[in-house]
Image 1 (cartoon, helix red, strand yellow):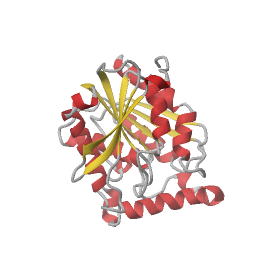
Image 2 (tube, helix red, strand yellow):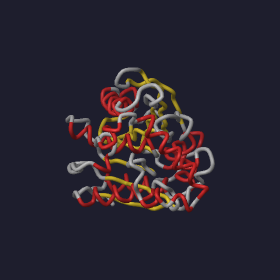
Image 3 (cartoon, helix red, strand yellow):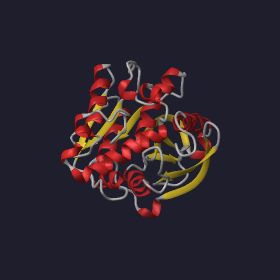
Image 4 (spheres, one colour):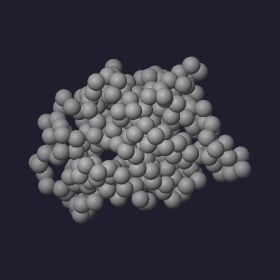
Length: 280
């Protein structure tokens, strides 16, 4: 990872981007020397279980990320929540933002060279699905995907999720995941759609290299690690990292875990490896 830039070099701009139907609030993070165009753009989608969350949720994490990696630009964006319109509204927004970013390179201060998609929890689901959509729809070309404690299994069937009855403190987390999926996927038939449940997809070839981060004691741990194994089995260069336990009972716990643990350095190392042609 590059040397950490100072807070004085951090620039944050609130803008609007174009989603599938509506404009969405977004935030651009840059650090280091002002004015210089960057070759790598990371588009980041927030968590919130599809039914909540906004740009503030991961603000501290993204500040730390860009300060530690000033050679990259980060574009964080909202998307349509399931309380407004359910699946596939959110993921259609996410893919539309990627297309918008490719068309608005100058506004972002980006050369257009490398586009990386990322997210945490529900946002990581959207990031993973965007790689499928970009492959299926002929673009935009993606350089990598970074999935932080992703929600990938609407069936909530993993061992780490089923073990929750013996962990009363985690039951609230499971209830929130279930409620989020009920809101996002009110039609049961959608729960096996690959654009809703990438873990169930049988077509995972020709996707960009992946960094997938799970966390010890996180109910989402097993589905993240299963997805990493499936990607690897399909020939996708995949790096899997299990981080220390996340303070899931606290608001923003997953973002705090990512910020305080290994995620920042892992992301920096992953992108450097991609740039050098040797991911993972």
